[in-house]
Image 1 (cartoon, rainbow, N blue to C red):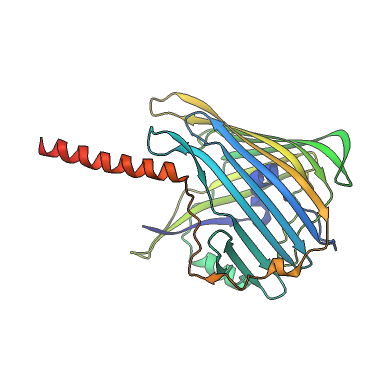
Image 2: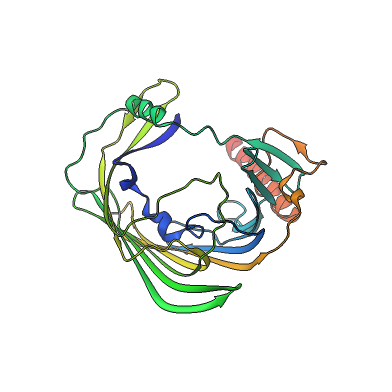
Length: 339
C-alpha cells in the first residue's frame, strides 16, 4: 500500500508546473490592500472520449475580509446510478472552507449537516528541513536528454471591455505537452480563451509563487514512492522537462475562461484516440461590500466532528431504486449459485 507520493524537484523554480498557468482562474499578481469582496462563480465541466468526464456544475461564492477568506461550494454531477444504470444527479454537500491568517486556523464546514472540523495545513519547512528531507530520498540518474517540452504561448488579442467596474483584457493561452523521442508520455494541448482583470484576492498566508518568466526554463524531476509496510522508497526514472514561454504569461484574475483540453490516449488495441475535456468558468457576481465578521466564524449550533461528510447523495427515489437493484442482484446471484 502506498503511503506517500512525492515529487522530487531539482533546479528549484525551473520545474514550474505550466498546466497551472494555463487553466488557473486565480493566478493573482502581487498583493495589495483590497476592500471586503464577494465573488460568485459558476464552473461547468464536460468531455467525451475513452476517458469519460461526467457533466458537472459547481457554484462557488468567495468572501474576503482583511486576512480572512470564506469559500462556499455547491456541486452536482450527472452519472449512472450503477454500471449501465439510469443517469441521475449526484449532489455534494453544501460546504464552506474558512481560512484565517490572523489566528492561523482553517475550518471546514458542512452547512447541510451543521458540522465542522479543524484542518491542519502543516508547518512550513525551513531550508534546512527541506535539504534533510531531500537527502533521505532515493537518488536516480540525472538525465542528459530532453524528455518533454512544455510550450506555453500567451497572446493578448488587444480586445478590452468593462466588467464589474474593471477593464478586462482578452487573452488566449495555449499549452502544449510535446513528448520527445523515447519519452513515456502522450501529447496533449490545453487552449484557454479568457478575460482577465487586475484584482488581487489573496490573503497574507496564501503561498507566494514567482511569476512565470518569458523564455525557457529547465527542470529535472522523478517520482518517489514509499511503502508504509517496508519503509522503503524507490525513485522512477528522472525526466528532463523544458518549459518554453512564448509571450508574457497572464497572471490576472479570470472573470471568464473556457479551457479545451485535448489529449491522446493509447488504447489496449494499440490504436490511439483523442479525448476532449471542456472546463468553463464564469464570474456571475463581483462586488465590494461590507461583510459581517460572523461569516468567518463557526456558528454556535454547529457540532465539532472528526470528519465532515463530503460524499454526494441522490434524490430519495434514486436511493430507493439503488437499494432495489442491490437486493435484486443479490437474489439473482443466489439463484445462480443454487442452480
